[in-house]
Length: 463
Image (cartoon, rainbow, N blue to C red; front, side, top):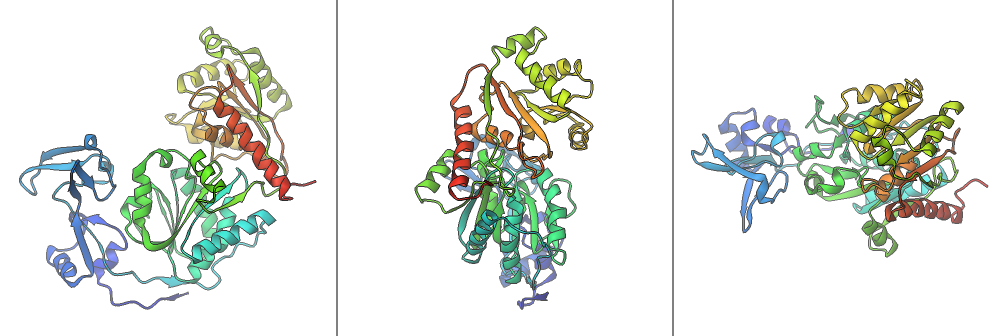
């Protein structure tokens, strides 16, 4: 490793370290801050900008008039507007001044930084080359890879190439648990490279390193820092529905930088763009182990909600659960909503007391998921909170009420993607119990069949 040459940097600029912060959060005297601004090493800008429609928040990009309010401000002595959208990160008001470094920070080059010695499949290697070229060319690229394709490993060669050039790399994801899960894997793969994990509760938040793993929310702290921005699970909530997070990603990137999107389930608009050549994509239609994706079966179960109100489950759903318990094969049972989850879990605990239910608001969610991973729970009833991120080697999956509008094409593809991820157990049952087929169910099944067909055409499946 060696540090790339740069001009002398003051302690204030070094402390700010790639962040854009309200002036009052800078732990330096006003005279020193003023001197740095006058010398051009720091840049100052208003926190809110007046627009024809009201206000725009410079930190989070919010322009929704409903998300601005006012208060009696002691600093400016007036009724001062402020942004409620990003209030959890500290108040940005009309008299706030945001400060960021105007000079590039020194960076380090690393020779042969990658210590991972695994092997990529043919499809992974092809995608890895495409990602690496996009990074070196500072281009945008979508990596459309089926669930279980091994997206993380595909990134390693490109990240290594960027680090060798002294570039800063950020891998951003909507969910905190993904940052926590990936951090040890990246530290093992790049043992000599400083890594910072940014998520709520982390003491590394805001610390710029050569390699940063961050939730998309935490990127609101960074400004023009990263040469390579990788956004994982770009289709996942909340990134898929929250413009503020897309804004955060754009603000954290340097003007010349690459942007790599990772997704197993791109939106229909993106799928059309890829098909028409409007967006560049590296498509991986097969899993690393070369077995086809399990295709969901549709099974009508009648008016299951009425049955549930009477304290009963549909007979075919109950039979499916009994069969998994008899086989001693673990399973997920997805349901649409929390109240239904509690009712279903209560009924199934009469069959086997070890069965548990988890949802986003459950305080013991992490504990229940862990004992399920450890094999001590035979069946986990859950909402879409576990549609991605939890991998169990040998598992079956069912959805009760697959016709509910919460089960979109993306959600159903992700749910089906829980099955068959391990090379040792590449098959499994995926069952969509429903009270009437929906377009989303049909599209999800078609999506999986299309990927399997593409994998066959490209010779990526085992014969």
